[in-house]
Image (tube, rainbow, N blue to C red; front, side):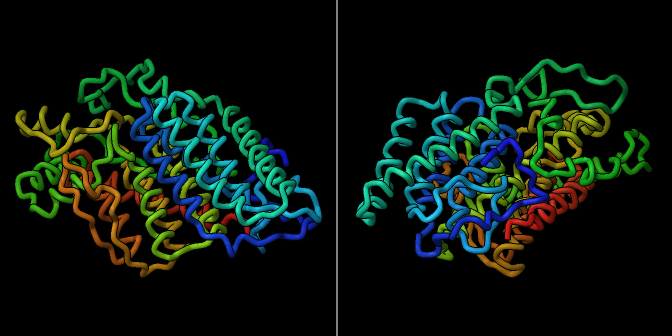
Length: 424
């Protein structure tokens, strides 16, 4: 298998192998690895939202490619695999070995304690799966294959030039001149990952085809669309309800949290547990949600640094009310389009396609957080969750309405594309 030739618009079925199915393997091994992934995101320096989204994309590919030969009716992302025809593989052992090696490479700057957790989780599932295999050669073969997959995907991931992006979150950037252009609003003097829009996407048709329309033209005229958008944010800040405050805080996933893409992964994990899903379902789910958030951040950041729209707090303080404050800290990036709208639109569109339009669930992602009202929230559908996540930025005072509405459309286009991949 050559991961270097991944083409997501032309997945290929390996007809030379006889699948040995994963349907009788529970998804716990995958869920625990992605739960650890979110812990590593929170506790490893530099894993901001764009960097985290990239890691989820490649983690999803790693899991899927490691077990796809055992998934009846599914296609590889990169042509034929290299499993030995006629030989048995334990797909739990394969997945476990692949994920362990992937995370060691991805989080090489993790703390000693967290590196130990990677080792311990690998040992846990090695012990669980090996006890069901009587043939030592099958055990060795399965682990070797998982490590091979991880190695090849880590090499492919490194070829995008962003494997150490956690070191360069705030690179030098020349702000475009002119009124209404973005300037940082917090302590950082440079914006977050200003060149992320140039990162290699997984979508074969690039991200240009899903970019939103232009934002409203900057204007201080009270009758202009831009001024009206700012006034709406300002007015809502004065009339905000307790429920809107709760929503704004619930979706605040900044540094030191799971981040917005990690929040989407967390919801996917909870759904898989609720469904008592098998390993094949988990592999498809993490692949598609991972690819969706990966490409969503590229698309969103391309939009942000194409238009360089200033944040509401900058305009409102300079034109409407110098004492205006946002409910939460304004993210260190241009305003248009909305980060949470794009990534949640993409991820929840994928989850809708996988589990249905009326799938109800409770989100426990922020349960136990003491800096916010960390009570789980209930949703009647993934679309319901996407809308709430997206508009949390409006309630907090950090996003204009059009940025959110256009961002949701942008994200849903990405999700639709990822959902249509020919993997089965």
